[in-house]
Length: 370
Ligand code: NAD
Ligand code: IPM
Ligand code: MN
Image (cartoon, rainbow, N blue to C red; front, side, top):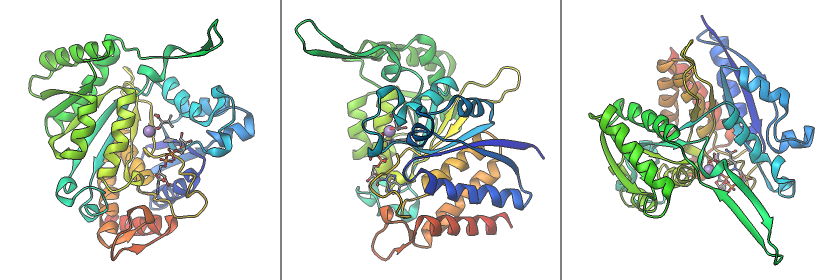
């Protein structure tokens, strides 16, 4: 049996609380001899800043680069609001994405049947929802230069961020979206703002050409990103795969999260390009949500986004598709039984802690493993 190395970066706030529930799953798989994982753990975000004065140490960066996959909790919090910009907690995550070349961020938004009433939208709008946001993750305004605040001669300041995309950056993320659409509903919606932004014009042209030349079997539509946000809350089931740049993807995926009931439900996979020699790709798996400082330390965070991110690791990094499916089924089954963390709680729900939710999912998973 192949042994896979996992590098765990729990981070800050609720990060360690939700990561603990994934550790329980890793231990279970190892103990049952169903899969073989080695784990190592590092510091990222505010935790790394407190220990090393950096958002991630060089030693932990090296471990992240060497691992088969990185599991990431969350970073940030008010404690680090005043630290220098270059070493703020979020910089650790951005460096991991950039240095590992994780250009493709997959953010599936699935509304579990039991949670259709947990969304702030009407049941019929979200019931059965299964969409996938493919977010470009290493380019755009997050990384474009110049990125600075300069003082002008008259004493006022000027801030600049640069939205920047090249043809090849757009081509490769478009191909990820088209390839995934072929495994799902066969439809891609490309969101940009070509009516205002030159990067949107190029994005539109390149996605159109890739679609026409390489994926004539996939239906492609273009939507302005602001309209896409509106459509997501009006009738989200019109979409299958949505592909967009780094910033629009950040915003649209938080919108999509609420369709599923809570930000605490949305997992993600961040993938690099396949290595030409081995076919393997660098990967990091993390929930879409942040460190939730308002509920950190209370033991009430929803661990499902983190656990579902581990399910994505099983699928995309290790080809353990059957295990991944079973873990998703375990989540669905526990929700169907009425167990709820507070963020998804509703009438008649049994409110449980982070730990109890994690344990219930592990018990269900174990039963499914037979
Ligand atoms: P957030 O996602 O941390 O929280 C937004 C709201 O959702 C809060 O009310 C929180 O309690 C709730 N929430 C989030 N995850 C939850 C969960 N698993 N269970 C239950 N409720 C949950 O966003 P924010 O408050 O805007 O940001 C807090 C910090 O997190 C900031 O420093 C931000 O930069 C950082 N952040 C980090 C990541 C990441 O590490 N990937 C992502 C987003 C934000
Ligand atoms: C996300 C987060 C990050 C982002 C932050 C923490 C840098 O909001 O992963 O959605 O903006 O990409
Ligand atoms: Mn975000």
